[in-house]
Length: 318
Image (cartoon, rainbow, N blue to C red; front, side, top):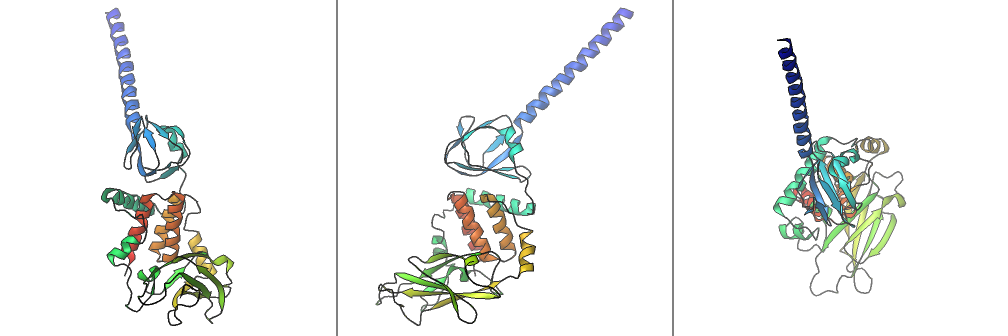
């Protein structure tokens, strides 16, 4: 009986070890199969276990990721954290989790919004190669029959006028070429104090400009006016009656400080998208435009980011 009892104890012991090992094996298998990333954006070429990677693909712990040179890859975790990869190489997916940067200062809802918008853009396949092409077709830019220049910023709803937080103003406009007149070749763009004094002037050959206002004397100004004048083929005013102006309000130092504490100081495309969403929610549309353009530039012109910029216009146009 004693011998039989010892055998029973040994059997139970081995049975417990077997069950433990089985549970360990199953749990390790489940961990290996756990989805940890979804592909949010991709430009270039990458493989997941020798299969070409596509937007929307799910990455599991036990898989291997191979990224070619000149490739931009953006991954989002199941809890809405974001990782961007631009360096070519081979990566084990489970090891990438340690590379996900902490995201401070921005509400998770902004991340969720961007992920949602990227998903929509991927699913419906809208093309936005020309960032203003669709606005023209959908009538987002409105103008009178006698208006030669129409600012794209004017097509956005802004009940209290446009407000600028940052130092960069990205301005673009549409041109209606009247028949029977000399072709409009260039534009003279000026920044004016409220008393009409010009503090910046530049002639451009296309209907857009990016102005670094940190280099413009706007001290003690609550706002400023941007003036665009069409020029003929001789470089003279196309018509003195066709001078188009857009007024921009400025924030004071305390207001800027409050905003700076809420936006991301990061320099990745995703950081810029998060900031764009924040600026949009606060109706700081000129800053949202600049953030979107930065995101497009940092993602090397990824069409997904261009689609997001287009959607921004559609949401806010008059």
